[in-house]
Image 1 (cartoon, helix red, strand yellow):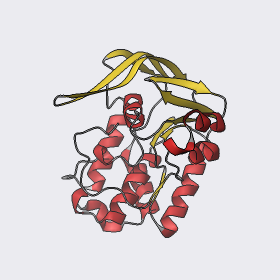
Image 2 (tube, one colour):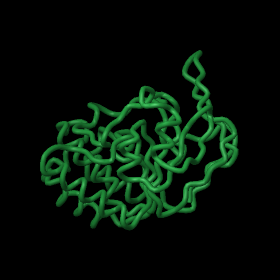
Image 3 (tube, helix red, strand yellow):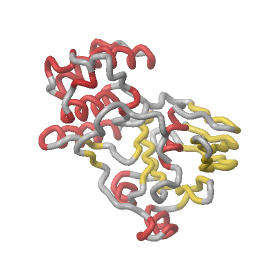
Image 4 (cartoon, helix red, strand yellow):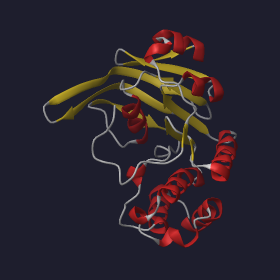
Length: 238
């Protein structure tokens, strides 16, 4: 269970302020495939980061009664100066898991070999993509947080990644924040929207799409061929 209790959030960047949420009370059930639909730049990434604890509300609180992942494929969780192995070991310690089987799984799944012992910033784009997507799914979270992209990579790895997502969806909850009605229709059984600084539940993906209209949304299939170059910067996208 993830619960927002009277959550207010405004982003402050230099002299500019962007209000994202105001007085939000909402619950996302455990073991559910939940989709939150919103147009681009209307608060999706902020909501994802509030659920994980990367951001904190200005007012109110976010209560988590399950083990919640970091956003899938988020480069910000990896330190570029550390090796892939060191980053994975650190994440396992943070979340309370033995790193040995998780690192073994990542090595077998990604097939990146000795590159796991290179500093993360020195990996090529394919290696970074494989490592970032696999590292999250390798840890047995109870709820996985998706900010638009849940499948990554190219060719055979992309196919294996999709199979891994399907497997995880059988045993864990997913919270997918997206501008794509297609993602909601394909994966989700609970539906919410972000509108006028609120998060509210709707009955279907079609109702969510019709709420905004197709022209305000950005459809996609939740796949990312390559993660961005370099480490995540300090500016939180809306």
